Amino acid sequence: MNIAFVPARCGSKAIRFKNIKLFCEKPLIYWSLLALQNSTLIDKVYVATDCNEIVEVVEEFNFSKVNIYIRDKQNAQDESSTEAVMLEFLNKNSFKDDDLFMLVQATSPTTTTYDFDNAIKKLKELEKDSLLSVVREKKFFWGDDEKPINYDYKNRPRRQDFNGVLLENGAFYISNVSNILRDKNRLSGDICFYEMKDYNMIDIDEQIDWAIAEEYMREYVLLK
Image (tube, rainbow, N blue to C red; front, side, top):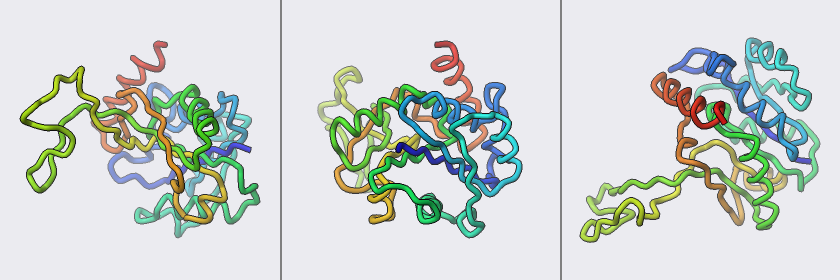
């Protein structure tokens, strides 16, 4: 079985009720759930929330694969880690050790069904333990030691000749149930990545992110 897990707390200090605020005319969380609902490889989707308002909105979508999981209050605080609620969920349910577990971020609405399905295919084809989504960042980075991290400033490359670095964008992570329970982490063992387009770099956290993400969504996802 392939399981998708979408954490969605009530609390959001920068944007109130962010997960259900209208984004391109739909609640933000709708877009991730729609992409998962349309996946041919995801069997079940769980929204882990502490919030009645989120429950009501998600249930109105009437997506057949989507289930609600009410997370414990101690794992729904500002300081609560995502790993904590993942482990809570897995310990309260009976899944097989080799079931795939995909952690999905509702604040990355430009992630598509194509991305989810192809990432699962890649993980299985490569026979890796875990996978994470990344984007390629073609910028020059410097360290606190005042030395360049990823290029030689004496031989500055042209952008088209520069490979850049891979940046974890947080859109999704895949591992299996036994790995997560054993290592208590979303990633472990032999790790591979799924590279996404540069517009998938956005992770909505502040109001300015919201405006940019809506433009990306309209141009690169909804108009296709």
